[in-house]
Image 1 (tube, one colour):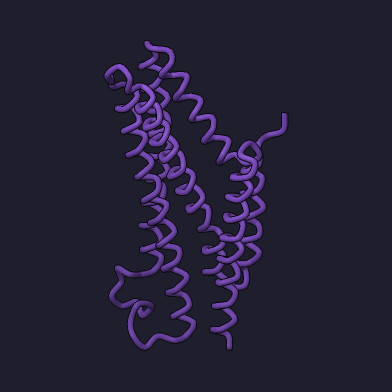
Image 2 (tube, rainbow, N blue to C red; image 1 turned 120 degrees about the horizontal axis):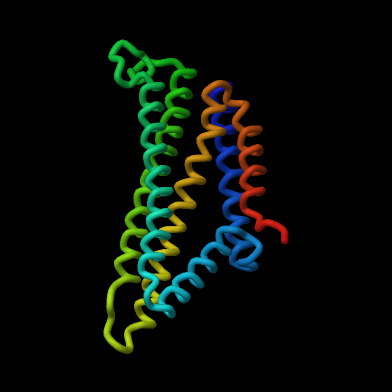
Length: 213
């Protein structure tokens, strides 16, 4: 019975987080300038158009993209360090630890599930952040390359797509990392997961709204 209650609690928490993300995506699609994620995509699109319409700003392009790459690299490094910490927390390197061996109790099985979710969260954050670095790098190549006459529109479209993909991956890496909060709470007590998820959603809501003028 306790196992079922814990599974339901975890499912409710994940459902709350996914429902918020779904609502945010729908709101961004309907009113792009009401949500920071879609507003940032619009700003990046305008930045690419401005840069490509004013030759001689290559140094500005490199500096701006370098700052973005550094931020994404920092996030990837933080995620991989957190992943290592979670693996150490699991006791995987300790052969005498019974957590990952057959015949464990129901409580230990639930602890394994929580730790696996936490490890998966950090790994996903690392992957998203790493892919963000990759797309930021390629955006610099596209913007600073010379193209034949008549291909400028194609280059702008490709640069915009790459830059927005990089921004999307960075955003997802950051949000995935934040998802560790309810999972960490669940390791101490599964029933803390729902309140922690609600706190996380409330915090994200503050970040996801555009600042008032």
